[in-house]
Image 1: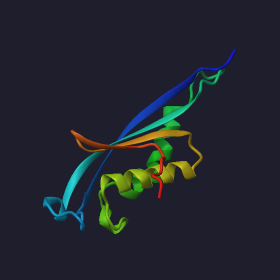
Image 2: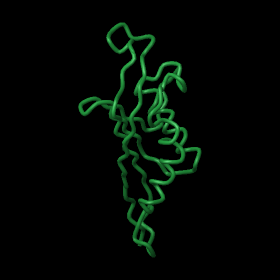
Image 3: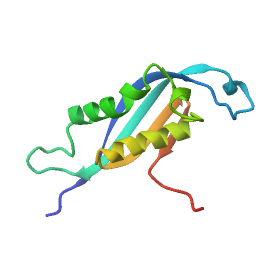
Image 4: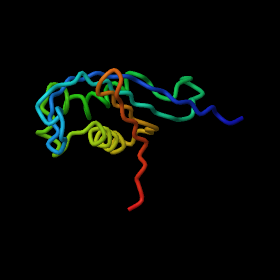
Length: 124
């Protein structure tokens, strides 16, 4: 019997400042956000543990690879143009480098504005 394929998600929070140098409006000026990050993993349910992955393991990887680098920082020190889109792709890349079976990254810049990245690339 095949093992069920299940998506597991964990939500994280970090605070950071930035400005968007290429933006014609207010976001051109320094401001901050309380970002909410959702990371979704997908995999088969392990028959012994009953889990796809341990939530504590997910927390450790995201903390080490993402939150420590971004929380309470000026994102412009790390990114040339720190849009939510560019930050989400960077987060994806950091977690994929760790070999995690990531399905999707959701980065909420505000309670009503978010970006979703699934590792897709537009044709050139």
